[in-house]
Structures are given as structure tokens and as C-alpha cells.
Length: 406
Image (cartoon, rainbow, N blue to C red; front, side, top):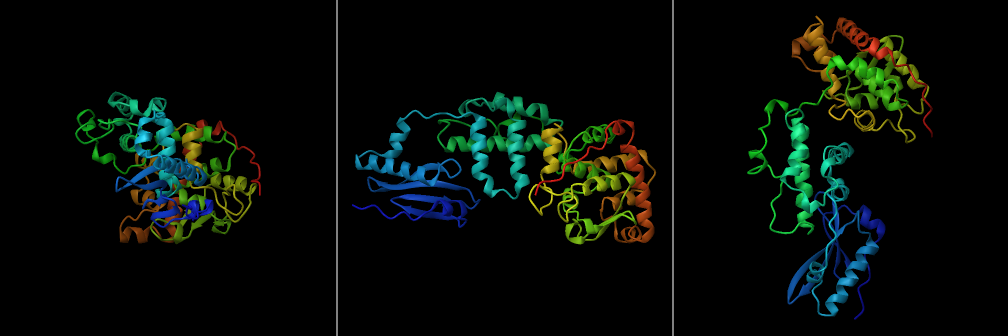
């Protein structure tokens, strides 16, 4: 009997987003999950019952490969053999935890909220789970998971908790794909297992961004200035201005008034949805001079793509991957600034909160948005700049930056 005409194309496989099963013919289906993940499925009848046989994720199995696997399964059916049972009878190659985790992140990546979320998954499983990456995925036990988590559990609880959940999901997926045999219990499971072996998390740690101690910022600035990258310029500018990532990477030249020494961030880029004026210190103006040397578009800190700003992961990659500050976040430098202001200066709290673009109460907020508030904030930012430009920072010198290609 003639086979059905193939319905899918390689382009369709990569662009189809509608959740559900999409037939290629002859029992082969592309399954798009609600999360956006794509996988192959071969459906057939065996002894009057409908059976489903997974053929792997799209990231690892191409359309041509999926068709070959489906054809092989049909040959077994023609010979009176259940292809699922035949596969179970064959020895299965067991990947390492690292190999399986990397493949899983690729498969589920389309379902992540944004590129940052994808990077966080990949980064934690490669960096913090390094001790177990070389183990066969079916040999990861409770003792191995504890060895990974214990060094982080009391010092970086939020990171440790997320890491535990990601390890648990990787191992659950390995079991679902037949890489771990039954009977089995997930060694990374919290309730009824690791909650009996690890201390309870402190509630106050939830939601905080890991921050560098303000005492360490001057030395870090000196190290940062040795870096030849637009991202290092942007990161120092962010620290100087106590700004958020989105505010900095989206900065455009028309927002900068050099004569008045003010950077005006429009409402659409502010978390509170209100325009925010940032007083620019002398050091910030120097950084802008350096940024102008690599000017490639309207963006102050241009990315590698023509006409695009710096990626929202560029500064995090510089900080965590290249400079190996694994327990620090870019956003955490705002906390460093706030701690420094609160512990070492006499500036009113309201001035600090206004510098951070935080709402501090209707009346106070209005007062600190008047004209003199800018000058009060300017004094605060000048003091912060002076502090982080202490001798430890001045050991570094401005590097000449190459113009971005394109």
C-alpha cells in the first residue's frame, strides 16, 4: 500500500508554534507542547490498541532522522514486532548528567520567559552542578546532590534552591526518557526527602539579588577597567549611576545632556513608569566619552548586531562567566550602593531611595522630585563615585575600545 505524502517541511518544524500534534504522515507526528517544546512521536496500533512511541526532541532529532526512525518502526511492525518492546530490549546508551542536562535545556528553552531565564538555567547547571556533570545520569544519588547543594545552602540559599529544582527536573526527564530504570526515587526531591537532610530556608532571603559588599566595589572597579569590552563600560556606568540593566542598555545619545550633566531616562524604560533624571558624575562623563569612540548607532552601548543595543545578558556574562564573580548579580550593585549610603554617609534615606528611582511615599517623593532634589542626589552620586574611585579602583586605567563592526 502506498505511503502517505509527507506533510511537514524542515522550516515548518522550526517555526510551528500552535500546540498539539501535527502529522507528517505514516504515523509520524510533531508534538508542540504548551511550553513551546517540540518533540517527535510515532503512533501505531498494536493488538487493537493505539500506542505512542517517542522519537526524541527536535533539537536532537531532525525531520529526516525522525522519518528514518518512523520507517524503521514500521518495518518492525510489518515483521510482527512491537517497536517499543524491541527498543526496550536493546541496550540504551546512558548519557552523563551534563550531556542530558544540556540537551534538556535546549528542548525546553523555547518555553522560557526570556533569554535571561534560559541563560540562568544553563549557567547554574554548568557551574554549580559541575561535580555531577560527569556522572552517568542514572547514577546520580542523594549523596551527590548534597555535595553540590551543601556549599551553597546557607550562603546562597536562593541560588541553591533553584539549582535543586533544576537538578530534580533534569533527573525526572531522564526517568521519563528511559535513561533511569524503575524502581527509582528522585534524589533531588525536596518534600519528604531533602527537607529532612538540609536546614529550612530563611524566608528573608527570597527575592534578594546577591550583591557584592560595598567594601569590595572599589577593588572590583579596578579589575573591571582592565577589560576591553563595551560591556565593561556599561557595567561601570551602571554601578556609578546605581541603575538597572534595562535602563543602561537602552540608553540613547539624545537622553544625555553633557552640559547639564544629566541623563534623562524616559518613563517607558523605568520600572515605576516615571521619567528619571540621573546626575552624571565626572567619571560617568569620561565613560560616555569612551563609549562615543565606539558609537555605532543611537544607543550609547551598542551591541554586536547593527543598530541594536548591548544584549541584556552581556553584563551578567562579563560578571559571572569572564570575571568569575559567580555569587553576584548585576542588579545587586544597587544594593551595594544603598548599603554604602546607609552605613557610611549622612545623606537622608529619601535621597538614596530617590537616586534608586524608588517610590518613598507621595509627599516625600514629590519633594525629592523638585529641582533641588537633583542637586542633593548629585552630591550623593559624586560621593559614591569618589568612594569607588579610591586607590584600589584607580590602579586600573581606561582601555581604548575598538569600534564595533558593522
